[in-house]
Length: 126
Ligand SMILES: [Zn+2]
Image 1: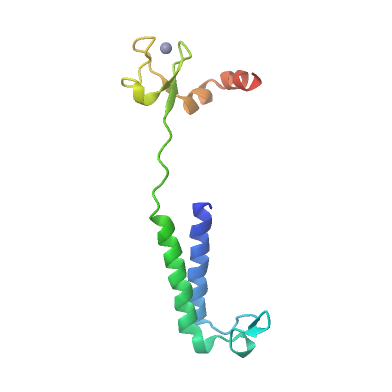
Image 2: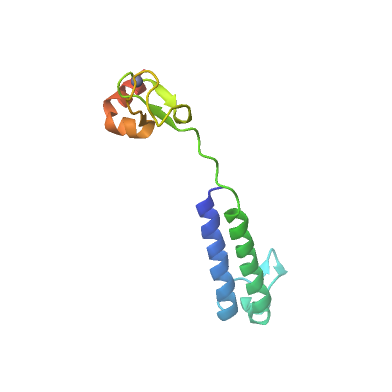
């Protein structure tokens, strides 16, 4: 699942928990498949602390479990030489210089196609 969705969801839970504690009355249906889960009229005032804290606790748990996940390692960076059109793995190069043409700086692939969009179009045609 997308991280942003989890963050937004945890914030919604947090707000829901806080509003449960401070504005417990305007809560909707009191029955869930015919079972009375909440006191009559959907008024959660008697259990507002319990319910509010459960919601806040879940939201914090959700937020930090996602936050602690390590971001995915960066994929190897590819660069391209503007002179001989060769693509390299940047880690294999010395200071980003082309192996074939001495002292020619290779360009990050994304940057390269921004610079020479016509080459990208050629590539897509193939
Ligand atoms: Zn080159």
